[in-house]
Image (tube, rainbow, N blue to C red; front, top):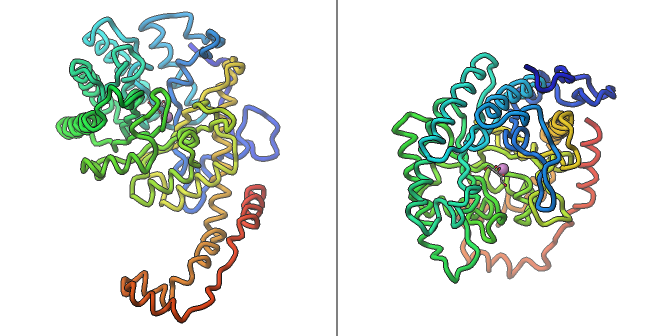
Length: 437
Ligand code: XUL
Ligand code: CO
C-alpha cells in the first residue's frame, strides 16, 4: 500500500532545476569540510506534525484528511507506520522522532496503552530493520492528557507523579528497543500559572528526582541514549521551568545533573524566549551541552509557537555556523519540529514543506562552511579582542592582573582608544556569502 503514490523519490537536481519536487541544495553525498551533507545535517521527520496533525486550530476543525484517516485505532496507527517509512524513503531522510501517543492510541488503562505501544514498536522495529532508518529520539507526552493539568514531574499530586514515572519507564524501554540515539524531555506542563498556589522549590526538586530515576533506570536496562532537555519559555504554562538554555543549564547544575544531560534546542522556542536560535546554540555549546536541534521558525509578529518550516536563510546559516563551530551536532540531528500551515492541507505539502526545510538547511550549511573556511567572522572577532593578546590584556587573561595593577595602568592610560563594531558592514558581508553559494 502506498500513501503518497503520486510522488516518487525526491532527487537532487541542483540550482538550475525548476522541479518543486527536487532538491536544489541538499545533495546528501556532497562533502563539506570533510563530512557529507547527510552526516552534517542528520535530518529527522517529526511524527506528530507529519502523521498526526490535521490542521485543527483554536478557531476551526481539521482541514487535513490523510489516507490513514480512513482507519482508526490500532489500524490507523499501523498505517501511519507504513506512511512514515514511505515518506522517509522518498525524501531520503535518515531519522525520525516521536512521542509515545503519536505512534499508538492510548488505552483505557496503562496496561492497555502499553500493549498498544508494544504492537506498534514491534512494527517500527521491523520497518527500521528493512529500511535502515533510525530513531533520532523518542519522548513521552506528559502534557496532553487531562491528568497532567497540574504538570507531570512538577504536579501537586503524587498519584499523577507516579503515573508519569510509569509512562517514562515505558518510554525508556521503547527507546532502548528501537535503539534511539537520544531521549528527549520537553516539560510541556512543567511550569506554573500563579505562585499563589505553587511551591516552586518543591516542584523543581521533584522534577530533578524524576530525572535521577530516569538516569538510574536507563543505566539498569543498558539504554545508552544521550538525555536531552528541550527548553521553552511559555506555552502551555505561563512560566515554563525550562525557560531557555541558560535557565535549564542552571537547573541541571543545581541538581548535579549537568554531566548526564544535553539540550535539544528549538528555533521557535528561542524566539519566544526573546533570543535568536544562534544565541541558544552558542549558550549550550560554550557549556558543553549542545545536543540536538528542533528545526523550525516562528513568526516574529505572533507571540506563540507557530512551528513553521525553516526557510529563513540568515537563520539556517547562522545555525549551521554555530554547529560547525561546536564541532558538529554529535549524536543529535536536525529534526523538523515543523508543520505545514492549516491552508496547506494537501499531502503534497508535507513533501514541499520538508524539501523547503532541507534545502534551506543545506544552503545554510554551505554558507556556514564558507564563513568558517574563509574565517570571515573569526578574523573579525579575533581582531576585535586583540587588546587581550598583549600587555595589560594578556595579564588579565593569564590571571596575573590585580585591581591594583589595573589601576596603575588606567591612571597613566588616557585617553582610551575605542573602535567601531562595524555591524552594518558585517551584515552585508553575511548576505554576500549566503547568495554566493
Ligand atoms: C513543543 C515541542 C515538542 C517537543 C517534544 O513546543 O517542541 O513537540 O519537541 O515534546
Ligand atoms: Co520541539
